Length: 594
Image (cartoon, rainbow, N blue to C red; front, side, top):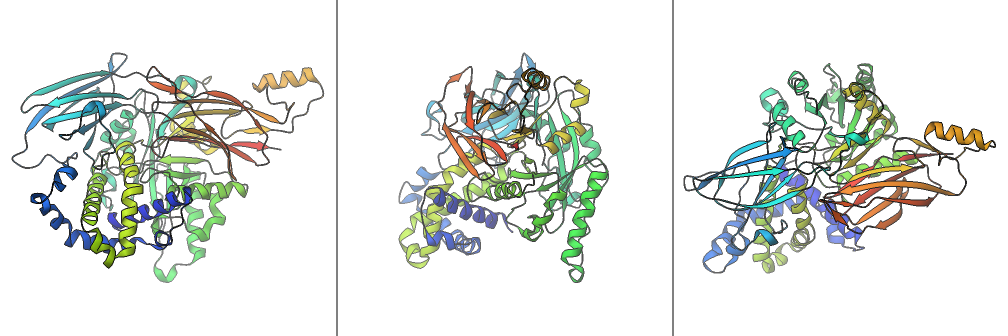
């Protein structure tokens, strides 16, 4: 599947999801497929895009729609005028890796009123090094700079101007508004690729970054652990283990291709290989036995067996629906893959539905995230986005004739342009790179640091679901004192109040004894960007939605609260905080035990 076809497949699914969320019925959209759209887009690009571009002498079309493509690798041509930028990022006065986003302003744009959703991507993603320093060349012009370091830090914005042959120097002190490690939580990345997935080393992914560059990128996002999960081989393992630092825990890993789904072999030092059969030997019995064999091998070697992106668009890397009855061989499920947004109609939404389906059957597979990054700059997607916007420009310029010749395709593409592309632009400029989605795991703060800050302990917490998933918000929830992955026991009924009080106190669960038909829910909800709603959910859907009011202080929003909730008839309760797909957190469920 080409990148263009995959993009169009995702777009059609998301458009269908938007219509579903808004109660819109559209048979043309529902029946459209990516292959039809791809042929249409190819026709537009081959016949009309260049013709549209040549209209610059007739109207101000190009002036209004100039995307001024400038990506990480966009400094080309002898006429390009360059200046130099030097950035330092500090935390408590000490250099620290951080994410640096540079948005080049168009002539009509001003830094004070800049809106990243403007129909073009002029963003460059870069990072400061392990020492907190970045030195690079930029084309001359005005820029909005965004400095960030994950969920626990304030997002800093600034304006700079790059002048030809001159040095612009900037220094930023990062404000961390909460130290989650001190409260027993660390965040990490579970699905990332590097150069060892490329054809140079026998792979087929277009990846150029080294393990060291990947570690730097992860740490710039505020991550404290990370799994490097290349396809086809484990050549990255020695270099990845060498990335261990006081504040970063590398976890060796491999993503196993099976032709019926991708399996993560996390924490396994040996090369686990799924033996793909010849066509004449390809039977369900053989395929099932191979899955059982490799997951057993992963576990026997102390590793964690995870099913990745189980509802991907490509059959070869999506879990075979015929094998849903054997999902219990896995220990975790990646329900949120960073290669597309978590929205209704997305493959992530379908994976989440599979996760909920398992819970309804009594199978709890703890949920995880993974960015699935193949390019830490994400500029390959930026180019694809710009090409799609050029296509839409050409469609609008020739709308009348196209509606007559290709009415259905034109209708769907214009709908994609109006209803979806602004969201995808914001998502692309906010949520694509290492750690764009991350998994926070809880650890016991009473244990020695060396006992909790290691791959084995982290994998153990992932297996138990002691975690929440996020691309922004901090969402820590306790239900009757119990966290995600733990059980709230509704059957406690002690007659001896003294004994009951002592036992509850010993467990730190004073609220465990049920005196009413309600649950006490403590919610710590912090974010460096504004949120709209908090949802209380069960395996059977959204139970309650709470509107959130924004109160910003010291660079962040605090939506923390204590609430009472009636005991559900369901067996699981989890929580979702969100603004949109670019600012979202999902907890693993608290288990309701009867």
